[in-house]
Each structure stands twice: as C-alpha cells, then as structure tokens.
Length: 519
Image (tube, rainbow, N blue to C red; front, side):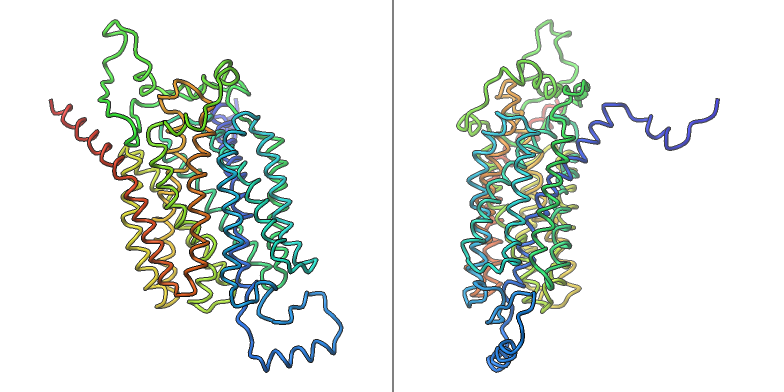
C-alpha cells in the first residue's frame, strides 16, 4: 500500500471538529476585520479633506487660470485648502464631528444591538448589518464623485454607518464563544482579536492608495469589500457546533479565571463527587468544566431560556468595572485610530499617503499586544491584573511617544510599535476573553443567551469612550498636540484606577491559594 502524500497526512491528522473550529475561527476573523477595514479610511482621508493653504497670491493666480479653462473631471475646490466644508480654519472641529457622529451612534446602538442580537439568528443579523455597512461606507465616498459639500450629508452617512456596524461585535464574539471553551481562551482570543489591527492595516493601505488621486474610492472600495463579506457570512457562517453535529468543547483543566469579580475558591482536583459521596454543586461543576458552553446552546438552552435583561447583565460581578475601564482604554485606542495619521502629517511633515502607511505600525504593535495580553492572562490566571500592568506601562510610554516622535522618523517607528502593544493589549483582552468569561459567568446558571448582551454592554460602554476620545482630540489639538497626549495619559490612569478593586481580589485569591498549598 502506497504511503499517503504529506499534504493528505496533514489534513487527516486533524479531526472533523478541529477543521470546523479552524474554519469558524478564520471566517469570523475575516468578517470583523472587514468592519475595521471600513472604519479606517476617514482617518487617512483627513489629510486630504483639509490641506495646508497656498498663499493668497498663488490662490488668485490659480483662480484666474481655472476661469480660463474647461472644468476637469476632478472636482474643483476654489479655496484649495481641501474639500469644502472642511477647508475652513475650524477644520479640526468639523473632522472631529465626523468621528463623534459615527462613534456616538455606535455607542448608543451597541446597547440595543446585544438585546436584539440574542433574539435573532446570528447569521441573518450579521449579514444584514454588513450589507448595510457596505452601503453607508460607500455613500460617504460618493460625496466625492457627486461633488457634495454639505456637512450634514457626511454626518448622516457616519451616523447610519455607526448604527449598523453595531451588529458585528456581539455576533462574532457570541459565535466564537460558542465554538471555543475557556481553556486557553486568553491566547486564542488574543490571536483572534488581531483582526482589529489587521483590518486597520488593510483599511489604511487601501485608503492611502487612492487618497491623493481620488479619495472617494478610499471609501467605495472598503464598502464593496464589507458587502461582499456579508454575502460570505450568509453562505458560510455556522452559529453553533451542534448545528453541524460537532462535539462539545473538550473539558479543559480545572483552572478558572475569576477576573477579580468572584470570591476566591480554592480548587482541589481530587476532591469530587465520587470521593465524598455528595453530588457536585453547580458552581464547582462550572469551574471544573466548560462543556456547558456547547450543551447550553441546544434544546432548551438555545430556544427555551429567556434572554437576560439589561439590568440582569449589569449585576454580573465584574461587568460594571470592566465596562468603565474599557471606556477609558477605548478612548485612547480610538483617538489613535482616527487622529494618528494627521498627527504624523503635522509632526513628520509627510503627505497623507505616507502618513497613512506609517500609522499602520501602531496596529502592528497592537497585534502583538493583544496576543501578549492573552498569553500572560492565561499563564497568570489573572485578567484584571494583566490589564492593570499594561495600563501602568502605557501612560509613561505615551509621554515618551509625544517627546520622542519629534526627534525623527526612526524614533517614531519604534514608539508606534511599543505604544500600539500597550494601548491595544488591555482593550483587546477586555473585549474578547473577559467579555466571554463574564458572559458565561456561574451566576447566569446556564443561560447561554446572555453572552451577546454582556458583550454589547461592555463594548457599548467602551464605545462611549471611543466617541469622546476623537472629539476631545479635535477640541484640544488646536492648543497643541502635547495636550492631547496629556489627556490620553489621564484616561489610562482612570482605566487603571477602575480595576484596582478587581486586581486586589485577584491578588488576595492568589495569596489564599498559596497559603492553602503550604498547609
């Protein structure tokens, strides 16, 4: 009998369940990367919407020349300071209003999205959101081709896009939570959450390719990509392992991640129901296995359990603290997302395309930061402490970035990578592993439909900070970029303070566990 080719041996070395999980991991990764791909163009195009004005003599000469020739295909803006209405001296406030309109709509819509999403099939809900997001993203770019100079047109496009994009995060987190249990959840979701940075990088490169020649395509092309991914979602997304007769997630080790939100429980692996003759209580059963992630979503668990209320989700220990912490962490992250290319343009005196390309290094650092945060939290079994450690390092790093970035391009590259890792690490951990942990908390008593609501509450609260950050940056930046960095450092400090109670509980739990082992 002939030996199987190496490729076939590799394929058959994995089980059917493993292939399905790898497929869902990759599919949800690409789906949400496309959402972030469509959010990035606005930050790249800002440098084109407002340009440094030429002198008045040059403007007068250009106007005389323009009056003598036929109109060209490229829309003409008489002021030559950019694209009207962003060519005025208050352009930073107007650009900040675009960011704020999107993010404010996203924050408000997120609270509703989780409640709606857990009552609808994920595949249909996510598909509809992606198709609508593609439409409104392209709509912003169509303003270029139809020579639209009405500020409200662009604001309404941002508001509509912000609302429909809220369908994304609760859907993909619920889906990935259904397919993967708690074993090594921090590392798995840290790798998976790099879709945020990958989407930002691709969005930056796509938008930067057309920004100087035809910035409308910087929005139309990402819009088409999101819509196409919506079709892919409809054709291929599988909400739960049981839908394709996959087995439950294998039980992991007896480790648990309390996030500082539950009372410390010393685990004794050899002490079980067989030894003491008593039935194992529900709480200990939850700590020793995560297979309920699969079984809860079948039969009564998926269809008979009533959806959790908004107030009921807030009562889950740790939800409020992590939500408020994410508010400030996301404030910092989204300020960089929307304003970093313009900052690089002003400080390094680069054109919009090169500034957009350089800004992707912040997201490259974010990929490593998210993976590192997940790996450390899995190893230490302390989510809150991991976030706190990275937040503590982030504040002085931001100060160094503001000082070092003025010394040259090489220093800016290094600080972009380091800042990206420390800023995005806590943000990535809270929105993925922590949200999934809290969404399957023992206090829910097996209600698998709560994960979407818990995820929406945490990310929705964080999105309030995401809306405030770019708005504050637009208001503060005219007084100097240093003041923007001071604002970001204060936000990091606030995020850390909100986690202190949970960090204290985690450390106390560790001390009690160490004391127990010694005795």
